[in-house]
Image 1 (cartoon, chains in turn yellow, brown):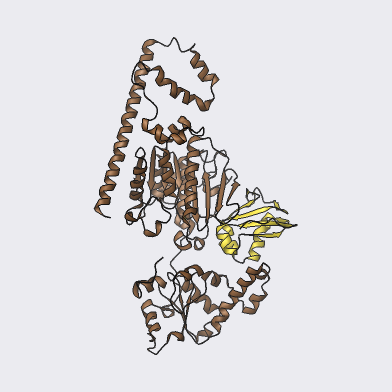
Image 2 (cartoon, one colour):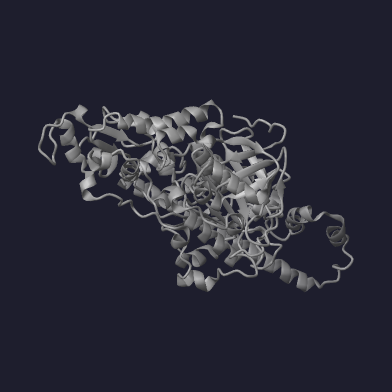
Amino acid sequence: MSYVKAPAGHFTVLYFAAASSYTAKSCEHLPAPVPALELFAQLEKKYPGIGQKVLSSCAVTVNLEYIDLDGEDAQHKDLVISEGDEVAIIPPVSSG
Amino acid sequence: MSSTLIIDSLRKQISSCEAQLKDLRRQLAEAEQLRRQKQEKERLGETTVANDPLDHDMNYGIADAFRSEVYAALSPLAEENVMRRSWPLEKAEYKRYGRQLIMPEIGLQGQLRLKNASVLIVGVGGLGCPAAAYLAGAGVGKIGIIDGDVVEESNLHRQILHSTSRVGMSKVESAMVFLSSLNPNVQLTPHPSRLTPETAIPTMKDYDLVLDCTDTPASRYLISDTCILLSKPLVSASALRIDGQLVVLNNPPLPPGDPKGGPCYRCVFPKPPPPESVVSCGDGGILGPVVGVMGVLQALEALKVLTRTPEPPSLTIFSAHANPMFRTIRLRSRKPKCAACSSSATVTAEALTSGSLDYVQFCGAVNPVEALRPSERISAENYAKVRMGVNPFTGSENRREGHVLVDVRERVQFGICKLEGSVNVPFSEVARTPVTTTAAEVAQMPNRLDGDGDDRKEANAKESWVDELRRNPDKPIFVVCRLGNDSQVTVQKMKQLGLDNGGKRWIGDIKGGLRAWRESVDLEFPDY
């Protein structure tokens, strides 16, 4: 499948590996803007349990850039996800 | 293992040792020659050095990248009359590596770097096999391989160093047979056991570069931490189903606390995934070319680390069914408070070797599921009797139509083989069904229904499996899965959903699942 560009007023979320299994989706569009720190809460509302089971260990990127939301002094805690952005939820894959 | 294989393996090892001996003799000859040259120079005095035009050109007129090649080409020429001409590579090596040697990205200098390099490959499975093959093929001088497993038939679709005739042989030994016949110039070091916190430092310290080709979160943190402690760059990859990840870590490999060093595994993934969410290739499946492409990319990154200056850190994610298939994410540098590589690191060599860093505990262990009481379980033999018509608990007649057999394996597995008369309710659907909701509430759940048609169908499927089982409230329900874990969780869930009519209907699982069925009832039932 290929990813469709987000419609006006939306951003794209890409789900990889376990995130894709949990949501049964590889991507979707959500309304923008959203503060980065509120993204997980929104996804938890949509997919109950995803926070603890998947998101807690995930890497998150916005427009192919790793974002750091962990802790008080996190570098990107004020970041706002805006219209047209591409967010990726990347759980660690450990098998091989 | 047959005796022919042992003989074959020994022959290969002997030829590998002979190649090493030859290499050592060559190194000795080179060292002796250098000493002779030095003595000769001292005898002639150092009068020519300062005004030597060649010396000037070499220092000021030639780009760094080419200098050593020019030296390498010129120095034997100058000594031509003194003694037999000697080349930096063996005659056969020019031919063997010719196709990469002529590339500006490698060149003679790059080839010599590879030849002098030592690489440790942790795990010779789906990732390690292709990685090792390409690194041995490229002429990396020393390759160490670690693995504690033996070759199994189910490995062969992706672990390309092993073969049908070597099933049962240790993976390390099998890999040695393949690699030494691929390239006898490579010095191979076997480490035929699992890497542990106690052995990690002594095992890894003598190598220039490490490849993480393992398959558990615990080993990934252990290898990354050890690489930080030993200042070794690390090429880490992983793969599951149709997804893969690749990242070059600790490159440049600067000491902990130096922010200019490359990030480590903990910087990218500070928290391990919850243990119950970790899926192995055995449980989740893996496509050979998916893990193969990740292993090949590891070899490529290893060649880059060994021959080029470090690039800014990035994480490459591969997804076979996505478009584009590859995405490369820019990573930040080291995490300011990383537990392993920052100035406030808590991971130390002492903590590692003393065993106080418990990686298994850090990543969490999944205990075997023991969720049900004995009265809620039935052995495969006894279930076979139920199918024959006798209830082993009551002795009463019990025809096959008198019960429901629910198989909770995922649809694909159910499609491979199933017990006659069983109905499929995939465990993923069971797990997603909320306990507190009734069918009517499921229908009203807004988030489940706001998507496309597939979402709606899925939501309907979820309510229907519970409804379907409510339809025959008197028939006992037997739940089966592949190994007997998911079936127990399902039995509990069914009871929470009230399918047991307050205890009036028996619901239980088949102990040990379809594996037990195969082992004790039907040997012909497929083992996949």
